Image: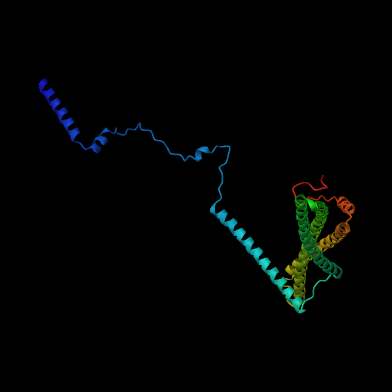
Length: 324
């Protein structure tokens, strides 16, 4: 009986192994999974960004789409308002300019200041002409000095190759060297004159003229808003927009008066500076030209020392005779 049971068990085992061998791979994998029990532990997934928050610090608040839309709308409305104000001001100023040319509108005139401005513009034109002519003179004279330098070198070279005329060639070579040195000194004085007058015309005077242009633009705006206010005041229904026109008039009047005061002060200081600068430069120009063409080398050197001008020789890399 025991043998029969053992045989039966062995038979069952054999049949079970055979069944396992014939089972597909997926079924084998499923049979190896342990059954779920109540002791199985579950874990709750928590977002990683929440784990960085602590009780003492508040989380970062990001701008919501609503806030971004509101800021964009504010910027757009601000730009539209600026464009609207600019368009209204441009229209009024253009209208004022046209009416002034046609004689249909009056303009604010400061006779004394207008006369000074016209005189300043005329003075700048004349100074620019002097500057242009001096540059032409300096350019031509530079070519003369370069030619004299080359001629002196040629005389010196011939003196060595012509013993029968050596004395005559050396005499002329020395004369050309002297003229070249004095010419370079005069070129230094002319360049200093050009630099100073150019600064006066294109920087100092131009700065004041820029303020004058701003003043003239402010005058047109002031007259445009003044005319607009006067037009509304005479109409029966002028109360509509009268307060706004009054505010615009006051703002542009204050700006206009401020710029007029600045221009008056600038022109006063400019006139004093112009006289001082031109007095010095005209004295330099006269003394240098007179000393050179009269052949007075000592007076030419004294003129450059008086104005602290250092000359660099354009024809060589050696320091000039003033720097030695």
